[in-house]
Length: 265
Length: 294
Image 1 (cartoon, rainbow over the protein chains, first blue to last red):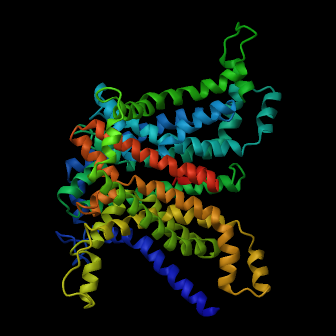
Image 2: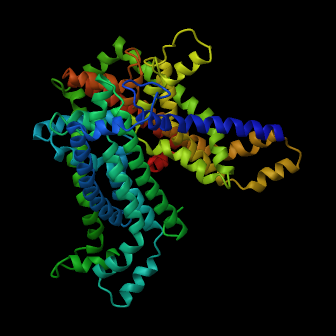
Image 3: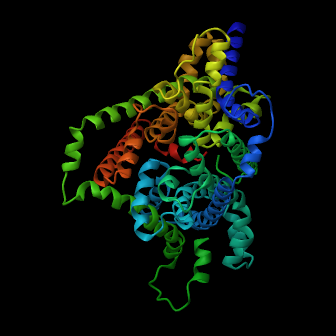
C-alpha cells in the first residue's frame, strides 16, 4: 500500500514535469547569451530582450495586438453582456437557436472560421486592416463572455432585483445599482478571457492580417517558419507572463465569485 | 428584470396588444446575433456553399473527394493523430486528475502547474517543443550527454513530435473535466469498498473509475474535437508528410482552389459535429464545450 503510494507520487511528479518543463525551458532559453538555441545556455544575459525592445517590427506587432485585443474586449463584453441578460428570458426555441450560434465558435474548427472570414472580408476591404481583426476576433471571444456572464446571472437571487424595484428604484437604476454590481465579477472574467482570446489568436490572423496588420502571434509565426533566433524566446516569455497574470486574475475572480455564491458551481 | 426595463425602453403609446415583455430580451440579444451572423456565420456559410455551387449546383466536388487519394491519406492521418492524441491524453491525464482531486496542501501548486500550459498560447507551446525536440534540442543533447546516443535523433518534423506536442497542449482539457468528476465522488464510497475487503485496484476499477466516467467522456470529446482541427502545431513541429486536414485546407486556399477548400471544410466541420452528436446521445456530454473556456 505504501509502495503503491510512492509509485503514484513518482508518476504524478513526472507528469507534472512534462506539463511544466517545456514552458519553463523557453523562459530559461530567453535569458541565454548565445546566438543559437543551445541548452544549457553558455551564459545568461538580457541580449534577446534588448533585441526585442530594439526592433521596430516586434514592437509594432506588440502594440497592434494590444490595441486589437483592447477593442475586442469593448465590443465583445458589451454585446456579450447584453445578450447574456436577454438570453435567459427568451422563449425556449429562440434561446436554443441563439445560444447555438453564439457558442458555435468553440466547436467550429479554427481553419474553417479563418477561411470563411477571409472569403467574405476580402470583398469588403477588411483584409489587412485592424478593423477586420477586431470584428473577427470579437466573434471568437464572445462565447467566453456570454458563458461567464450567464454563470453569474444564474447565481443571482432574483429577489434582490424585485426588492430594489418595490422600493421604488427605476428599472435602469435597478440594473445599474443592483444587477450590474452583482454580476461584475462575471463580466470582468469574460473581458479578461476576451482579451487573451484575441491576443493569442493566430489562425484567423494568418489569413486576414495581410501585410498591413501584423499581430504579435503572426509575427512570431513568420519568424518560426523562416528564421529562428532566440528573440522569439524572449517574446514568448513575455506573453506567457502577461497571459498567465491575466488568467490568474480571472481565475481568482471566478473563485472569489463562487465563494460569494454569485456563480453557479 | 425584463418586466422592469421594458417600460423604460419602450416609448408609451404602443398598442396594448404589443407584448413588450417578450420584446426586451429579444432586443438585448439581437445586436450580438446580427453581429455574429454578418461577420462570422454568414461568411462561413457563404464559403461552405461554394462546395455545392461551383460552378453550378452540384455534388461533384464531394464525389471527387471520395476518389481523391491525397484526401484519403490526409483524412486518415488526421483521424489517426486524433486517436493517438486522445488516447495519450487519457492515459497521462487520468493520474494527474487523481492527484488534483486528492491533493490538499499541494493543491494550489498542482493547479498552477496544470493551468500554466492551459493559459499559454498554442503557438508558444509548439515553439517550446521545437526547442526541446530539435536536432540540437534539449532532449537530443541530454541523450547524447548520457551516452545513450551516438548522434542526434531526428524527432522534430516527424509524427512523433506532432503527437508529443499535441498531447502536451491538449492534456489540460482531459485533466480538468476528469478532476472535476473525481472531486464529486463521495470519498466514503471508496472507504466502504475498502472496508468490505476490496484491494486498491478493485476499488479503483469498480468504484472510482465508473463514477468518473462522465468526466472521462467529456475530456475525450473535447480532446478529440479540438485535435481534429489542429493546424499550428502540426505545421510547426511536423514534417511534410504530417499534413492534417486543416493544413490541406489552408494550402488549397493559398492556391485559390476555393471549391476544394470549401468541400474539405464541410467534411471537417461535419466530422466534428457528428462526433459531438454521438457523444451527446450516448453520454450526454455535448455541453462539455462550455467549459473549454480556458
